[in-house]
Length: 142
Image (cartoon, rainbow, N blue to C red; front, side):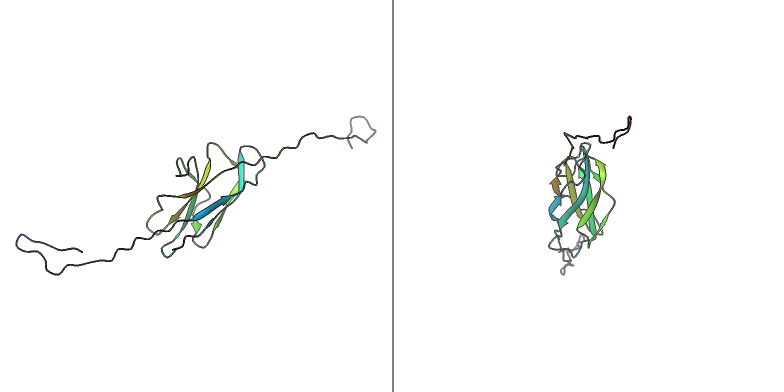
């Protein structure tokens, strides 16, 4: 409620405006590393939509060094409001990033507190390989 006032008198009928404080945060951020190289990531980052998405314009997803998005680096640009998934390209260097952090955004501003998932770097190495050379020619393998 807002009243105007002069040096003589205060307004008797105030003006007002209804303020709506909307909370729209993603939940259950999920990532499985499908890039099997050490110190590299790749795969889908997914999440559940917020319960209230009336003001939702989209999402921004970053690599971050903390669950709060410290030292963040955006992945692939803005994600439309009707998507719940973002592809983290294969061979993305892990560097010092430990988290994927997802923010909702409205037409006015990006959310200040993200939802996050900690990375687990999947590595697959072949070991104990044996080749029995059945080619009888010198300097050839087969």
